[in-house]
Length: 461
Ligand SMILES: Nc1ncnc2c1ncn2[C@@H]1O[C@H](COP(=O)(O)OP(=O)(O)OP(=O)(O)O)[C@@H](O)[C@H]1O
Image 1: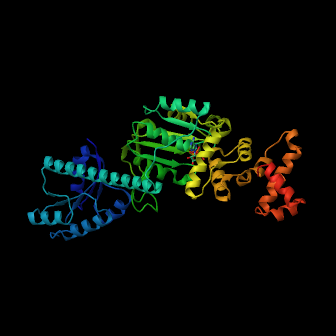
Image 2: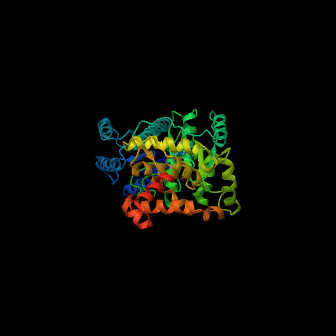
Image 3: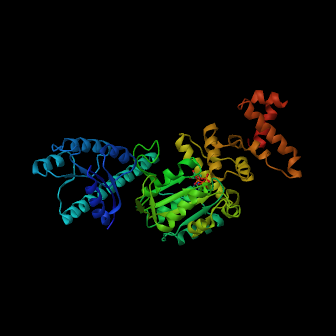
């Protein structure tokens, strides 16, 4: 049976000692206090599953008033608290009043051991299920927030990729789609690791359970632990209320840890032990919750080099990389570049209410020439910008502003001194500087407007 944390508050040391011994079999931890004033500071730091509270503290006090006042304070702190009253002056009236005020049960002194154990055991069960409901509610809230953040009802993830490299990758994905194997996605920035993780989740048997992601590259290292594992109230100064971590929120589902290479060594050790023991605990709590998640991790760093440099644990790598999937950079995907570009043109033409037929020939040539260090994300942004800037039905080369980026790339000798290239780039640059004003541009280039028009036509600018 699951054990819990029990707190006993009574001014009689003998009672504290006897109860502590008696309740040991039910408890993960029994704490005793003979002064009720110490109770609230303790409870605000550590959650207890059941609190046994004396009703009268001052000698000869029989009204129970003190006990009721403390009960009120406890419930103010945690409305879900499970409190059992202990009193030597048992009478039905007080029992009823105590329950009405929010106590869970009532133990008369002297007690019968078996009855006391049964009462505390039932109280523990109640506490566990209240806590579980609370966690589920928080989990639901996290999921609702995610759904809201996504704004539109989630459409199935679509991965564009007809190239041999992408088809090989998707074939491996299909092979492991029925499994729970931990996956490691490798690839440069913007190659679609995030998208692939979601796609794999949608194909997996866990698709009806939560999908929770966490980008370890965008949250400060000091917050990793609390984000991942959650915390109890009072675990640190700002922890005013308990919060489940993403690991807990992902129970039964899939957890996507992006930029796993950013995890500090102490956090790597913690993650490793959670994966091995399949249990985790919130900060400020010793109670562990079971971990049932499918892990998908991603990184754009070379973890093997990080292992050599002792920056990444090899044992953790072997736990997370049951299957490694490598996303090829965009420059190795051949004509996928155009499939993706056309897809983004449609998406952004719709978004910005523009009638755009497609991408012009020279623009296509430049898109193909460029190396796309930022991969699909860079292409998407370039297309979005072009859709916004263009004034015609076809996206032209100058709408993409690729010339200046292309010139920053090393060119071979032949290309570097090619007059046509230099002319095309100069015209493109000047047109941009003059915001497309032909008269001004012609003046700057030292040619007539007619010659400029001819060259614009020639270079499909
Ligand atoms: N094959 C693809 N088909 C359609 N869209 C794609 C594809 N690959 C990437 N994208 C789009 O490109 C953008 C960048 O992809 P994503 O965020 O998944 O890359 P990433 O590898 O996770 O990047 P980072 O390394 O920066 O985390 C997203 O908008 C994504 O939808």
